[in-house]
Image: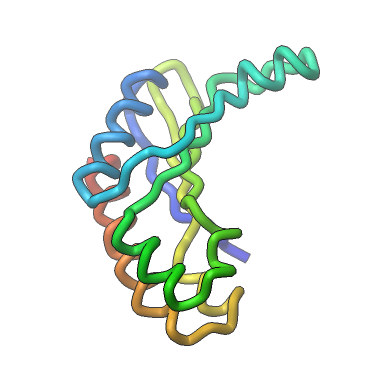
Length: 130
């Protein structure tokens, strides 16, 4: 099952993370959290997974509407965005596909917010891939 949307980005890791932040901001998403998985796994498990960051992205208007529709939706918020290096000057950006939210939750009222989030995420990924 495909659960994410992906863009290939021809940039070094730090530049790809910055560009991802900018592309998301242009679509109304702010970054609430940032988890450096490379540093965490190296410190806790002595395993180097390479440059890998998880950003917790949130569009406040969409989050408010979704939470008003069903307060349990918070278990799927914020939207996880992964930026990972796949080469010296190449990265992939993976974002949870919000189209899955209505199917996972079985709450029809969330479709409007999922559709809007999906369109915005699609635009951000398109910007990243160009």
